[in-house]
Length: 217
Image (tube, rainbow, N blue to C red; front, side, top):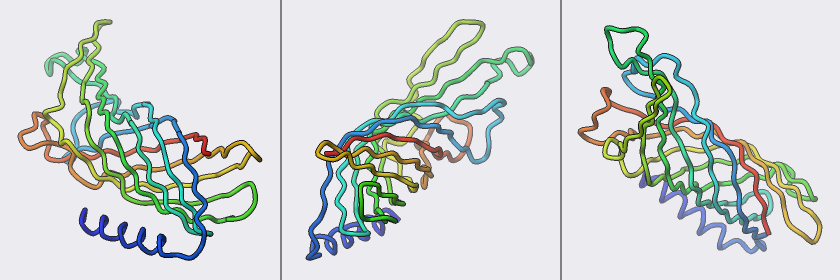
């Protein structure tokens, strides 16, 4: 699957580069919020599982060829989840709050379809693969007001593949810059657990949605 996605992207880039149309190039920075979960298979018994609110920020390059464009990005992104963990199976009151935090450098390679390709306001839809490179993995356990943090990077693979899709809006401020807003969904395509992971399940993948605000020049 990874090879197919890479080959498809290379062919698309070659086709766009050969186009006689003049590309409209925008470079910018963006940042926003992730709401992420980790889906385990088989599912783990963790009551109160909810989305982890994390951050993401980075840079993007947008090349628009009329109604179609490409947009590679480089983002530092925090993913993970929150849940409750029973510290003592014999004591139902021994619930601790667990906060799992996975920090990635993510490289989405997105294809844009500009719904309104002319004028100062442009709506677009986008999608494509995203490659993540794990930087840190930690779990923070909080029980009775006391928190402890543990490094668990060895339990996770160093890279993760996902599919990203969403909607966006570009607003051109004359003679200054462009403001972009997008909402996207992140769907993990592969197992993020390492071989020999201490997590008591077979597979896990990242999911979630994000809202980002960008400024382009």
